[in-house]
Image (cartoon, rainbow, N blue to C red; front, side, top):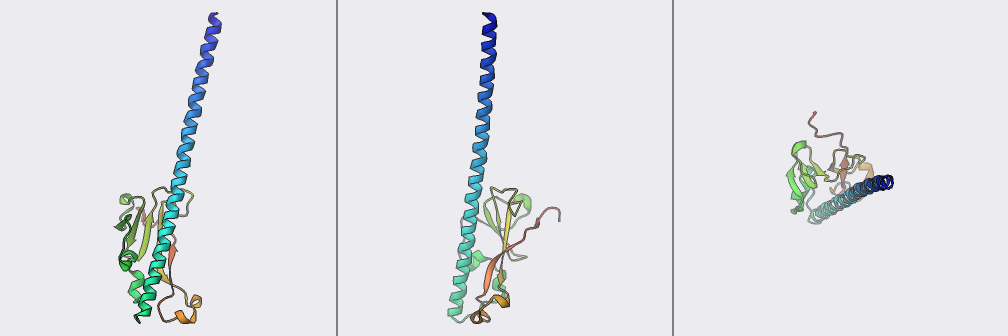
Length: 171
């Protein structure tokens, strides 16, 4: 009888340990799935803001063109949020050093004319491994412009800038 009780107790302990391991794996899987979902939502939000900025800048350029005012060259290096006179709630000003950036914030780097987004849910496999995505307002090359766009200042795009670890603390 005592051997049966010991075997039953041992089996019960292993069952509890197995149950705890399964529960721990389920919690880990749920956490990873939640992190991935939040990352996808953040990327979609970032792309939507990028699209809204590009459309807003195009509208502004069209308004200036209709008013007979060409776009000044300095406009290409200006802060898009200031040019459009609106800022989203997640705009945090100029780009601080790497250790001081807040995730989920839009920044502007005036020295280079870059618009930056610091991802909150960065994925190591993403193009910007450190979570910093960069764009710059650039004129389209002459060969890509139509004849009507050549001198009116309308041919530009908010183009992605390759992030090779800029700005990093190592440089």
